[in-house]
Image (cartoon, rainbow, N blue to C red):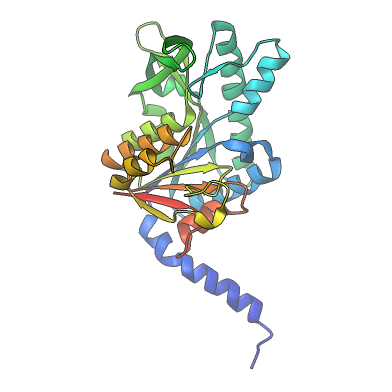
Length: 295
């Protein structure tokens, strides 16, 4: 026999499914990297930030690292600068770096902080060049068959985590932009946001590293969502790269994920940020909805 309170009972069942995960992860740090087209939809961003506030209230320590590729390209176009990429990395002149820094640290970052605060959470923007120390890298041009300069582009080689640790200790969500301070010159360097996120997760020994983008996860056939790989072991990654299952921009993301796991990160998740509440569904339900990478 049905009950007039059936809907409420079903809601309670959902909450109870989350209970063991809430108990397990209380006090743990989750590194969440936000990027892809999910960043371009204000409605999706609001839902994501509401999920982040839920995690914070539940006693988890979320740390956000964000990208901003399309916004940067739009800013460069408006300034009359051409966007050039080598091996998936944006060639960044001094003039372009000013635009990158302004877009990331003065537009996207404050917007995410304000979004968290709008749902009653507490957040602080941390410019990446106050947390990441970096060095320049070069790119490989397939057309020219040689290494080429990328300008002000770098990788993370060190950290100053005082602001991030202080925020976590006081239950404030740090929102970090992917910029590094060049060792020696202190000039700002443009860093791939996926690689910045994995480096920070490894340094923080995060329990989880979560990539939110605009794909379901890793798929054996990118055109067929039914081929989603739900779980993957780190030692299977190179085989999937060799057979072409993992290709293009996914290769550095997945390889850096494996490095993070070996450095002490508990688990890596790759999920579709376009799905409402995908973050909560992946973390707090038995089934999950994306790809997990484990040791």
